[in-house]
Image (cartoon, rainbow, N blue to C red):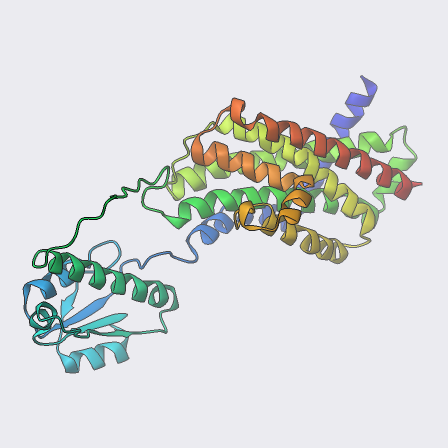
Length: 371
């Protein structure tokens, strides 16, 4: 009971120290609010309310089909313009795209010729230009093909594939980006907070005060693990409710309590990693460099950015020793596909085993560094 009391009191001390550190508090708030939002929406997968002007010199059925295909929320209603307005509008930044449909476009299509449509893009509008140009080309191709299908008989394919998108039917990238960023921030902040807590005590000289007290390294480490893990766990729960589901309107079909349980086991491993890095680094800049060197490979190779199946077999096997691999699998299964414990129990057991190994290794390193 005395040991539990020491762990509790030391953990409360860590929470108070964190509260008095405005830089880390601001980092936590930013990471689980604007950090998630900007990561989810920073690179649009499709244009959003893009401005477009159209010169329709054909005034035919196919040209009207193309123009009417530019709809909200991807494009604002196309504005009819002439050649002079096209140049002036592009120079003034009024239009991100201008489309010029030549005369006799429909007649040339039906005659089997290959007419061209001129598309001008304001490439200074970086967030819209690149995705929007491809989007417009696809619209023109689809509408032209649909128009020609009415006049030319097409041989029926032996198999007609009907594709249904599960969970994310519109393939909205922000849905994936928001959840994936929560996963990344849990790993990042848990390592930084625990490592910073140990370095802060060394820099302030409070670690010597702890050593002369009847407190063991095990109690010191447990206090830092539960306190910093609790902060990250609470912040991630709030972020899922307010930012992901509320602000970004991303539906989460799975069980939030089950995800938080898996996150707690993941935090057991990553906070131990933070303690280990804190014993290696002698200052906050050194800790930052260590985190960058370790965190980037963990995020890239754990399956959060690219599928593990696309990686070499050797890399896949090596990354099974990393807690992030199992946590990404667990989080995506729960939050994307609504998996229950009967599906994710192997990842839960793997996190317990890996976390225990990391905890023992960090504790051994901490004991050596304190003596």
